[in-house]
Length: 213
Ligand SMILES: CC(C)(COP(=O)(O)OP(=O)(O)OC[C@H]1O[C@@H](n2cnc3c(N)ncnc32)[C@H](O)[C@@H]1OP(=O)(O)O)[C@@H](O)C(=O)NCCC(=O)NCCS
Image (cartoon, rainbow, N blue to C red; front, top):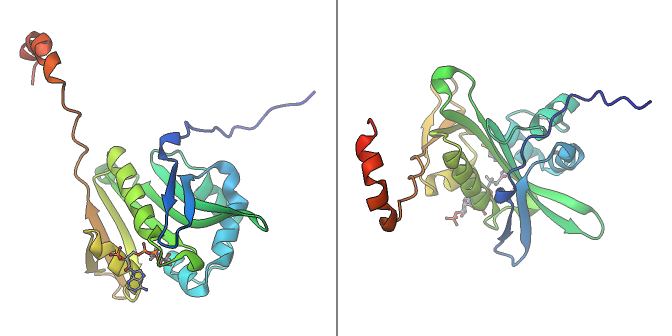
């Protein structure tokens, strides 16, 4: 008899984050939350980054990701850890990942409102506005999920990333522990609660008056 012993659980997939993004060269890519079966896709994306891009993304000379790291990067819960990927499809290679953006919330109780982020765009797809769009999608998702600050380490000589972050309101300062790094930070204002329809207000007034602050 077939035994189903797997304990892996698929969390609710945030399909609302699926989007089609038009780039400066007229091509479009699909942006979507990562799926557990994206390991091979993600490995190929990382393997095909140039050494410079890979170093800038991982701050080390990795060429391939170990299986456990791939599992960690693709088996996310979409709440404390969200990863968005951008992909395209071509006749020769089929599904091809061209960008990644993710945040991971910190686990310490006093830092639960802070998330660390990462971003990378395939070399041939850089300079087309994809990094900016992925970053915006990530920031919007983090804000809606209640993250109050995004933070990350950027190599101080990573000019494209520094330009992208500064132009989008991020603050960069030298890491006091390592002069080769900058700490990038963006404070996120909470999403305003939806305004109540004026027609509902008279009906709600007694309930609002009775409610404690
Ligand atoms: C940094 C990175 C994500 C930018 O992605 P991208 O898709 O090339 O960026 P975009 O085309 O969206 O450009 C974003 C902004 O940065 C600027 N920019 C992009 N490349 C630049 C470069 N080489 N030099 C200076 N500015 C640059 C653009 O002018 C643009 O500004 P604008 O929106 O005001 O026009 C991409 O270069 C990358 O993946 N690098 C390797 C991995 C990496 O460094 N990750 C960050 C780890 S912290």
